[in-house]
Length: 268
Image 1 (tube, one colour):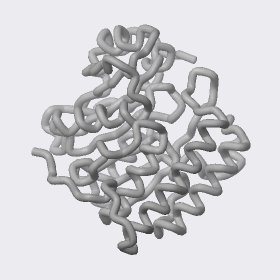
Image 2: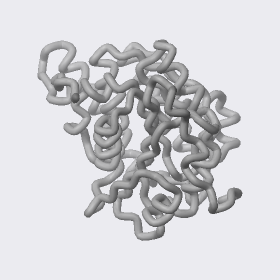
Image 3: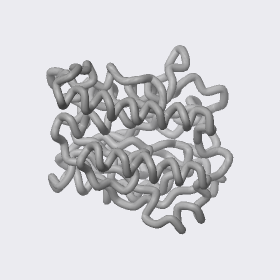
Image 4: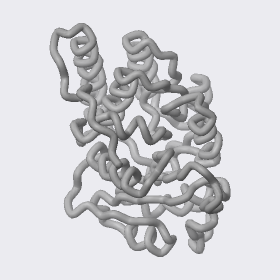
């Protein structure tokens, strides 16, 4: 699945130093050796200032390849899980002075060509969080290889979340995300789960803190090397999503305060 030459270097997509906002891409990686080059090679030239890859104890050459490409690399001494990986990603992005943080899965599932378009909604002040929606239409989603059970569960959960949170997003469960710095400064994401429900918790927190969410369509690919969770973990993720909504409403109604929604002081 790698149509690109391995000579790709990160300076091909970095921006000129004169640009105002500092754009940092974070890549939560696990065994991404086969897809890392292709993922970044599709990012349009000059739209990112730094690429940070956080490796969660890969057993292949992900770390070596990332360093050869010129990425900033952090390696977990032990596997922390998908949510735990993101915690390191966002913490490092803030420490590295990011004004806008974009998460790109290095598994070549999401079309990286939309990176500058998604960033634009943040820089124009239209949104504080931008998601890449995989489901512009049912036909495209299924034709792209999304399993039917994933499509149906996504539609159900996204509908429930839109109603519960007062939003109108097309895909609450996309792994392609862009954040304004202030979002990750205020939200206590370190208190979130280390598992996949981290993604849901972060969006629910963004709503609770009054940030503006939006999305744009993003083409996706499903193939063996693209990361995915099995049916059992999908069920657990779905239950975790519904549980997070319940926690949100109990906090909103003053029935039970949750540490997920206790504001943190902005980092410096």
